[in-house]
Image 1 (cartoon, helix red, strand yellow):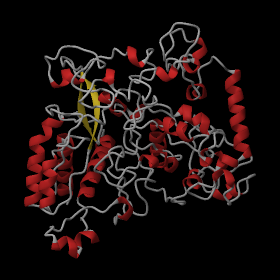
Image 2 (cartoon, one colour; image 1 turned 180 degrees about the horizontal axis):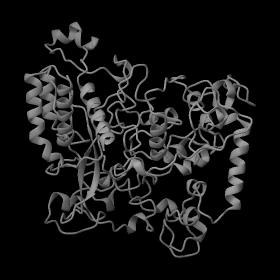
Image 3 (cartoon, one colour; image 1 turned 90 degrees about the vertical axis):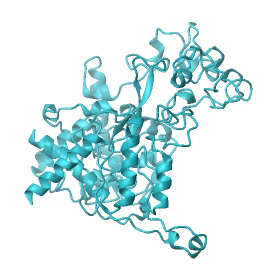
Image 4 (tube, helix red, strand yellow; image 1 turned 60 degrees about the vertical axis):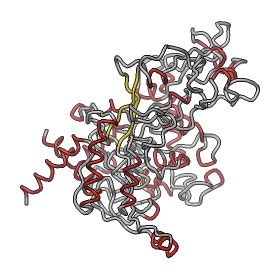
Length: 540
């Protein structure tokens, strides 16, 4: 219990210390032109690329940033700061500086043999988009995967986190070669990892863990002719190849060759280690021999039905009608000739676009007395393009010869109608135009009028510290509503409108006393912070 409290207080202290950083003035805010126009000088936080803090936003130690930090929270995720901008104020998913083209870099490339970043993004899906299309991500290449949350907890429990000296900062492959490998991912190619990691990322329910039940840390069998140098236990320690050892292996020279010419770092990777490939081949052969028996490898190598998405069988044995057109004839999945006509309301809708009967959730959300009707026949909004001047039935982007090709939502990478996208929906329940809202922050419902007050006072605008999810709402005609979860996912969820008064008071306080400590929006986080300050005061 004492260690649990210490971990919680450490997390809160980090949030507090990060908020206390002094803000710096940008050069462009001091231009003569700005003053000639009567513009007030504005204090703002520097961009990630020009951050002045030399300390990690996750662990507080100098010399590295949250992007590379090995420390994980009680849940096994790196949850103390955003890996992009090193800030403890928000999730990576909500970072205003986030570039989706960099998602794979921050969530996979820089997390080799390290705990996973706290993000709801599906890493396996990201890999599927690049494997075979990017020279850096060849299908048969072997790259160390991020740890699973449980394995990250076990490694931190056994080895700690504060003694790691980040010997190859900025060179994740080389650094990964000096760290322990997780057995279930060891030796897997990128093509295999795309399947093993194909699952939702962080969700609120993963916070409900008991680290004391994690058990013994699994290890990779020791390669007899490889001895790790400098690790306690010598030859008996789990495999962890040093850079020096890698340089002597077949094909592991330090000159990048054609297939990795776009790599961000010089190549020091087990990808060219013939021994590692041989081990991986033997493991797959052993798994095939033991087919039908449950094993860790079988679980990580599971496949999904291309007709219904289930992982208990493959497409050629699926008993359901075609997952695209809905016909019960002898075809399914990718062999469907009408696949292009399939609806976009689900990944496997089993109906075409003109047959969609998905119920409208938007109208009951705005008006609990609204009559039940389908999205296709909704007269309030087009559920496909969100226009208000036509219905989905007559939408040229959804129906007809000029219709758009079937694709996942660009905002959240899920297959659904635009009106069901959590990223497009305003979190404030009372908002009368939740899909076109300009009055609130789309991430967690902050009133933008408050930002205008902060700007007028020469202060920086708000920083998103929450993540939103659809939650089943019993008794609500819409069936679901948006709820907010703070950076500590174990704390109670809240409604955006419950924070309205607290936010106004916070802005008043910031403007009157800009140099004092700020309270946190999450009441539980704030209480824990106050307790932490009391402990520090008593100690002094």
